[in-house]
Image 1: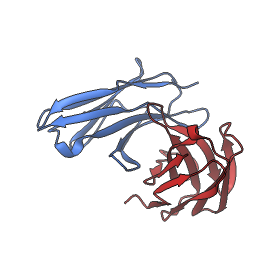
Image 2: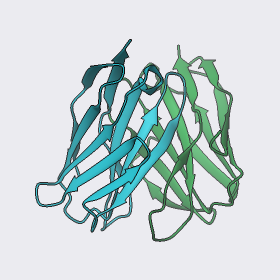
Image 3: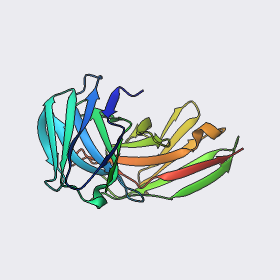
Length: 114
Length: 111
């Protein structure tokens, strides 16, 4: 247990569906992240939030829409996805600011787009 | 931008030492990390090293950093079958603060 939980763990959706991924951290961190992990590719950073403000959008298509209502919760809203969006979506959190800034990861949501 | 490279696969016998290697390009990297990912799970932080250190030891894990060659290694002593996983090296850019991950090394431990 890393203190970061993600739901659902598995999700299958059609290209016309709308769904949301949820991440919650119980570590008192102020930074939260979404990553995409595809087979045979390095981990890709998607979004970063610091103190609920989005500080990084790594050229992610608008069909992915993040939301951070508070420092403990992070959502990723999905709509009109493509089959190539199928991947493991990982959430992470860290203390904001300098230092080692270790990121703690959740177990991920395995997303399949049909 | 930063690039982090790892070999893709390593196979060892139980009880042997494993050495996983990583090279990076960003000389401004302030911290370098090793993460472990077991099947169906997220990434677990194993250890990290600050860029002004050469070595860090934590129980069975030894991290060596050669800053001149931009080379990082993770040595696992007395490797066990439970160490079978994918190991990711990551560097934290001194300029952007972002973590850049390698593609991961799959460690297979044979009994």
